[in-house]
Length: 367
Length: 153
Image (cartoon, rainbow over all chains, first blue to last red; front, side, top):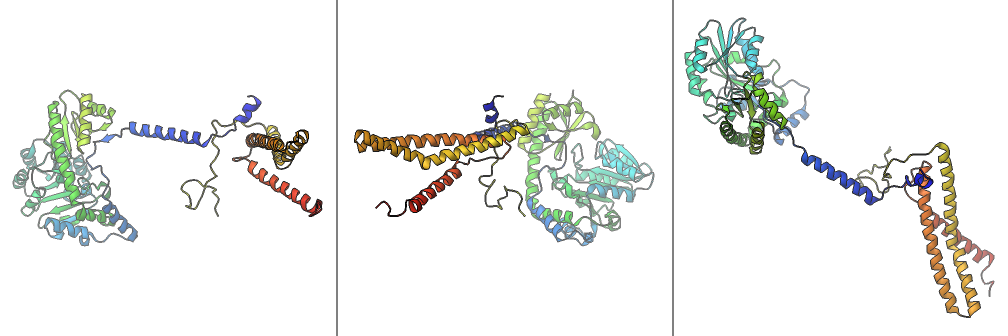
């Protein structure tokens, strides 16, 4: 390096040169941001949008008021009263829990003696066999609908039938008439745990039609959740509604120290101010459900009649795991059926028209 | 206690004016300790040259131009030609000196940086102001004390 070169290396860049460099960096960042395509996660059954700001505000208000105390006794809480009024039942027939899953597990433990049987259709919610084992019972998977369930229920030792409606992962809804037929035909000592966590997404029958059976069948327990259509999975709030005379058993399902006060505040705010949002969300899912189901059938898929926020589909020549891997390469995640009970299938979540378009484009390339 | 020089207390959006760091095209390779000492001395020499040249602008150059003008007037008998030559000479010499001063100032900045200092601005403005004050003071001293008021009358 020459003498002058040595000193020239200490020359600073002019303001124009610096600004030109900054503009080039900004343009590069923008180019990269535009090129980046976020992964579309259609593998979950929860709703992907963030909660409404009013829900967050309600939670924040309660959190700032004080987290140093135990939650109020839930039977006296506003959320509990709101739910009882919403469904027109006595407050004693509604119980709050930390999500429908926890209430289902509690119900299985309360009802099942060691060695007794819990029946569930299959494929279905993977928690059902697990909660039977945790209660030291026996999980029995049944295929064939209500008739098969009735036949199995007459076997000695059967205590509980767990049904998800709409069913996860198939999305199929158990019609109220079929549920009534099941309840009519069951032995007296068999209880039915009806998991309706996804029922808000259904449009084939009124959302609350199953609740009409509660007054006649005290061994029916309906479980619902704020995790799916309400989009509040992180709050872990669910509830159980029972028939007349079920108050004592429902009391056994309640969490020992109640449900978090902030969770209750969020769920209560959602009930009071976000019903229209949920209605719009459900309408969108219903439209996309028809679009995706028709499109998949046109492409040769075997698709179940879903009433949930997903479809359960199988390609005639492609395993579910292979299809999900190919879609994953295109930036779309779907749930492979192997973990859900049917390796040939995939469970594809439903979102909005843009997601549907992207899904179908990726499917055409993947097949 | 405020320790961050770029902390403006909300007065400005972004960095406080005049505190922007120097952006180099490439990170300079700094010399050894002796080289930096040499550069520090060289910066001092450059500063002396700047001060000297700056002083010339406030006294010797104008006086030299007046002397040349007087000589032309004496040789040609033309006052106008003398004044014209004096103005042209003064213009060329002053602006030439300023151009040289500016180059010396840039060189001084680079040498200061090479010596290890965070030198962001030049020193020409301050030197020019100081030399103006020095020359002005010297003139006033000569005019009032040495020459004395009314002595020429």
